[in-house]
Length: 145
Image (tube, rainbow, N blue to C red; front, side, top):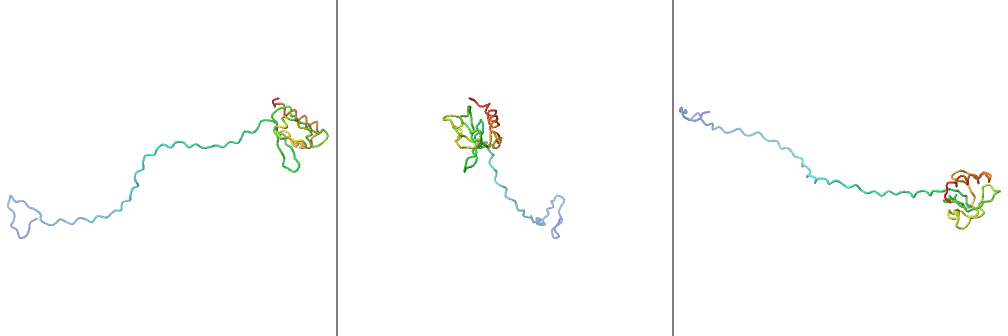
């Protein structure tokens, strides 16, 4: 482009555009979201130890359930034979009349006057004495002597 007041350029002249450059288009400001700081590499977590509370194992043996005057029923677990107790033969339920010192019944907490309600979970309150003894003998068979 030539200027209107300048002489025309010669054959070896270089034409330079002296017109001002157009203004650049306005740039929109873009809000940049801040990136979270880099996290340190995760270390492999060690498994946590968890304490497991176990119920104590149930005692192995023959469970006799007794009614006690003025108290809740009592379970006595006899762990060996002979049982070491005697009962009235003519009463329903059977009543403990004697507990031998150092015997299995004494060790299990059987006391004179307790009324036998159940043998190994089977109700014996209304059973004849002979039936109660038969059940006791059957259930105590696996006990050690």
